[in-house]
Length: 216
Image (cartoon, one colour):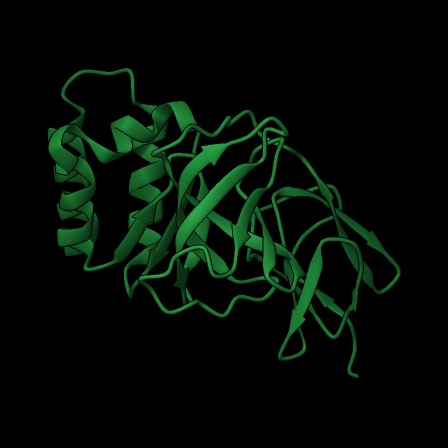
C-alpha cells in the first residue's frame, strides 16, 4: 500500500459516494473500492492517522408513501438491504418483494433510487422497485427545495437535463444523482436554484445562466 492521501479535511461534511482518499484504512461508514475510500453516508469526516471514518449526521426528511428517494446502500443482511436516505430512519429493501421485476443485486456503497411503498410502526420506510445508479455523483439539497428544483410539470429539471445532457435522478429526500460530461454545470445550477428558490423569475435566470456556462 502506497502513501495515504486524503481528499477531504478533518470535520468536513461528506456526502454518499464521495471520494475520501487513497491508500487509507477504512473506518466506520466508509467502503473501499479499487484502493480508494468512499463515504457511505452524509456525515462529518474523522481522520486518525491513516484511518478515515464518517460520523453520521441525520437529516430532517421524513418519508411518505409514494415518494421516490435516492440513497446509498449502507448494510447488507442478505435478502434485506438498508439504505441511507438522509433520514432518521433507514430505508429497507426486501429481496423478492417485486414479482414482476428481476431482483437487482445490491452491495454497500451502491447508489439507488426507489419508491417508498409504506412506513410502518418502526418508522422505517419500506422501499420497492430499486434502480441501481452507476457512476455519477450525489449532491444534497434541502428537501423542502426539491419542488423548485423539479419545477412545474418538471420544467426546471427537464431544462437542466436538456441543456447539460446529464442524466439526473431527483430524490424527494433531497439527494440528487447526476451523471454526465457537464456534471459540474448541473451541480452549480441546482445549488443556485436551492439558494434562490424563494425569488421570482428563477426559471428564466437559470436558463440564461445555463446558456452562459455552456457557451464558456
